[in-house]
Image (cartoon, rainbow, N blue to C red; front, top):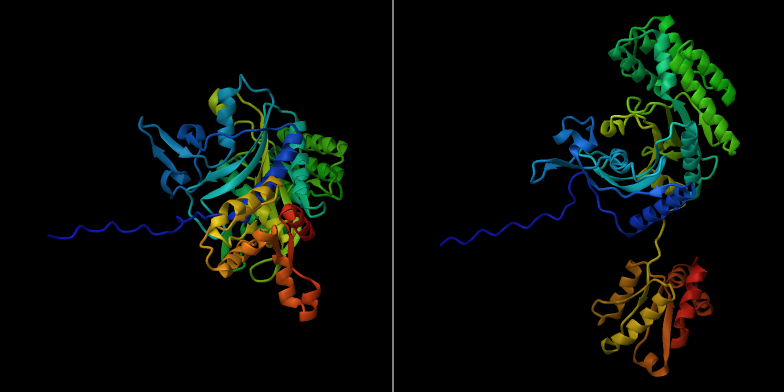
Length: 490
């Protein structure tokens, strides 16, 4: 009789495109999000935690990765044959929530949301299928004061988490201005308009001369390959180039240049007026161009936005993987989207919002030394006598009641050296030691592990004797002595 085949053991591996986050990473992210939430709350925004699962109809649009199953979302069919999917952002769920509960919500409705989103896209370096977003939106107000408020709040949030003034700038533009520029070119073919927009987006890479060529007949790229141009005449290309080079010495000059770029376009003029209003409102609150600036180079998912768009860029330099200096770049973006809720209600509902890239902002904070480094672990109460476990638990209980992070060693206590190795791996700042002799005398030994490591690495024998790293104190002074050591480390 053949032996039954064993079920193969599953491989212990993270699914492709996903990753695991451990202690310090999780606590750093939570701390950063907590500080951002404080800013949002100060501005009058309420927290919203919507479902991680939405109906496919509610999500409304899929991602552009059409080669993936379900066009980039993780979707499945439930028992009543309705298609469900994990949310791919926090904005689509907001539109559904507002449409569903609008009679019970204030108008305008200010909300912020923080949490993971999932995208069934092809993973790559630094590109994961699950990541965190941090959003804030105002739904139900067409006032430019809502847009100005979002920009001010974004600037405050960056400073609150540790990005100093001068190391960031929030750049603001308007989709209507760009529509006005397209109108001024006389281009009406949608495909040609899309080609113009793609060319505008290359301005940072190829400059004014390169854009001029790409708007016309075309140009040779760095590899020597010829790239066909959009086919505009010099006269048609002029408004686009005027738009891209309209950044002036101050806000007033930039706005004047933009009015010249849009010419007689009504929608373009409306966009410039909106930018002017935003700049005025921000200036009234003390937000000058050193923090928030009108910048025509901002181009963000233009098919999605209907008015002002903005982007937070970090301006300090970092070294890339080849050791070359470069600016850190964008960590947040958003804008006005007045058409999203209408999918549910049939009526246009104005909305404006911003999304912060959580992982990128954390990376920036590490570059600035605001987070990262060695994480401090808990105080470790070692176990010298298994029969006295209740006494050790009493010690750790006293420490915890005093607000000190602490734990009792729960492994095999037979080898004391292993306990100290464990404390080292945990990053413990202090170890508490008590054996038969200590219990008999009513004392505990408290070992300053940080100082001990420093002395061992750097001190001479004489200095070792002068700077003891282990102290014997009465049991009643356990908490007091441990607190004193921890305060000396901070």
